[in-house]
Image 1 (tube, rainbow, N blue to C red):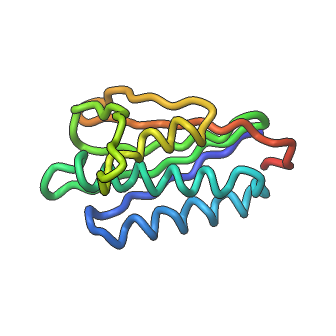
Image 2 (image 1 turned 45 degrees about the vertical axis):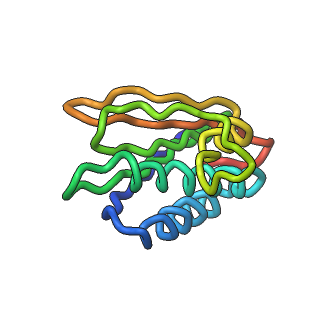
Length: 133
């Protein structure tokens, strides 16, 4: 069995916390607690990137979660086509580690163009033997 849930967030700093809460609530509802902190941290990083780098003026971002028996797929949709790239942050840098964290915590991640504009940054998390929907 599979399920999908999504929510649109305004391009405001408080939307990052709301996206984390939305994700945590969805995972709890589905009974998926084993990887919840990994997914929650990744949505925080991807939503922050969407807010800072991916939203055109007047546009917000969308968080979408898909679950099936094997995988939780997290997607963050935004309005700009420029693809993010993981980089090696210096020890003194205050930012620049988000995609490195996503790569470390998820089982896979990537970027794809969205029609008619924008992009989707996604990450996948293998289920850990929990009961899904």
